[in-house]
Length: 258
Image (spheres, rainbow, N blue to C red):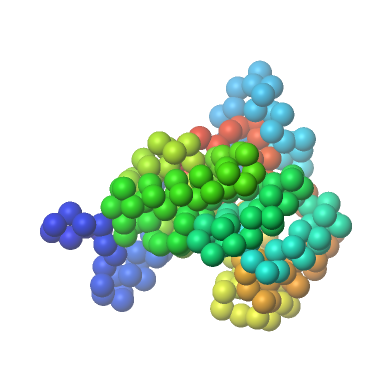
């Protein structure tokens, strides 16, 4: 965590330090993370309620979680059509401003079709640069908006750029949110080449993986059918993040990463 002499949480101004900060962020920024396998192992054997969270036993089959950040957007309905056709569940980390508030019917559809609806903050600010009250506002405002539409309050969140620290963890714990990072990214924010996005995902995918994509960029949704088809050929089973952890349960404030 970086603080000025006045105590304000702000990222370092120097580019080299910023790059180092990002590397720390992607490993949890000094916050210990829990793997899906460890989460499953922590569940009591008799915890039937937790086991009911996922019909798939990811301790026995090769599971992978497909996740989408920063939507919904104009292409999300088409993405949902693809997922429905291919019978693949996904986890959507939704952005509040200009997304949840702009596409409430799509948010409702995501929930109604059995996907996991999760929180990606209200305005995509870097949470480690904010005061605790500001972190709470970014997360709670999105929580409220999603609950108003779906009737359910998210239990998962993904910090923008994966940047988290003890303060973010504490606020997340208070709001009942577990933090979910990833193991596979196609950097689809930097390319419209759907074949390149597909290749990057397939090259990095392993069992118990969490794939990060964005359904708001032009090249992403067209890449999804090929990703799904090839990973199915390789023996992967697609699950939501809660299913990946089952019979374990995501604990508020904890950081989960393969």
